Length: 80
Image 1 (spheres, one colour):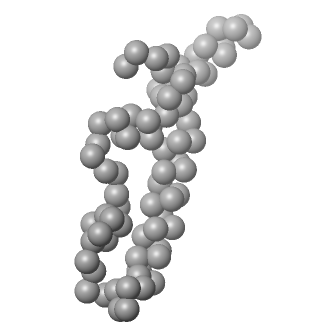
Image 2 (tube, rainbow, N blue to C red; image 1 turned 120 degrees about the vertical axis):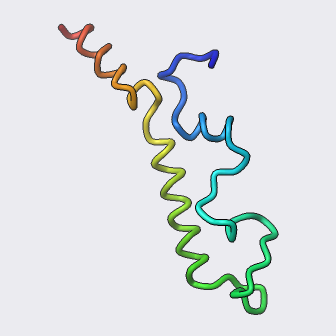
């Protein structure tokens, strides 16, 4: 980590260290699911896509500094 912990999120850490952060294999590009009829994904797949987007949004929401409580500590030192 060469940047300040306040400049990147948990998503950035996962993106740098994990091959692919997916909830399930069916989200993998090119996955041949037997439930997909006529090339259209099933309802379960669509729900996994929605949840995957929520996961990414949640991981991007806070910086590492905030997650570790360092941002709060810095704010307290500045205002105190």
